Image 1 (cartoon, rainbow over the protein chains, first blue to last red):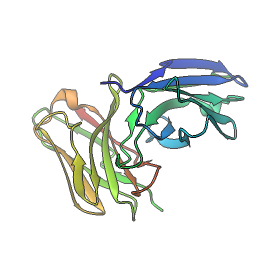
Image 2 (cartoon, rainbow over the protein chains, first blue to last red):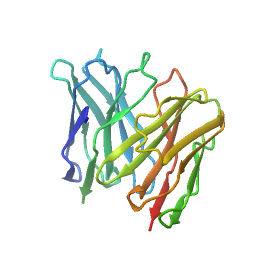
Image 3 (tube, chains in turn cyan, yellow):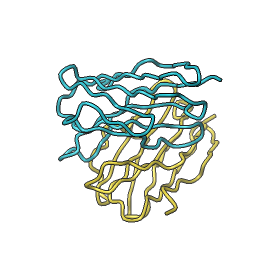
Image 4 (tube, rainbow over the protein chains, first blue to last red):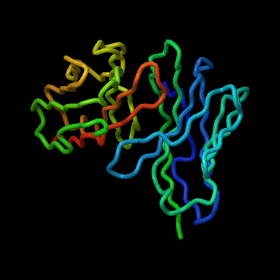
Length: 114
Length: 113
């Protein structure tokens, strides 16, 4: 059962452009929504995360937009750079009593071209 | 901090052989997770432990897979007997509980011939 749906599967963006990755979830009990970044040959690493009590969170060039009523959230990468080329995973979990068990989306391979 | 340590980094074995993957979580972290990553299925949670106790093993694909955490600083994932469809990258991650961020190890790339 796929509880977190992620799109697109792959994305090519020109340097300086905006990268947008979308996710949708089904379980309304989820209360923590992180994005992980994975470079080839490495494990995923936390990039940015949001709780459902806010609609947006920004850290540098990375922004999460969250729409609770639509059960959707997205990652925006502003001024995309070649070093951002990686696979991005959205995820969701239930923090309280949920054991921090993450449900991951299927991943988006981002390539930023010069 | 050394981060999550996994060994071996690469494992090539033949079908039917026993495979043991090892993980050392970050010191002080009390929850540990085992994941499997493939192109077809993405990142799948296999099992996780809280305070060395298995909490949810619903992701373990079949009885050929088993995991143990004998103490707070060591865990193993064993596959016996291994099959070619087990070929994947296996990740271990740890987290403080309560806590938000899972820290992943570098993974073990398993190839079963």
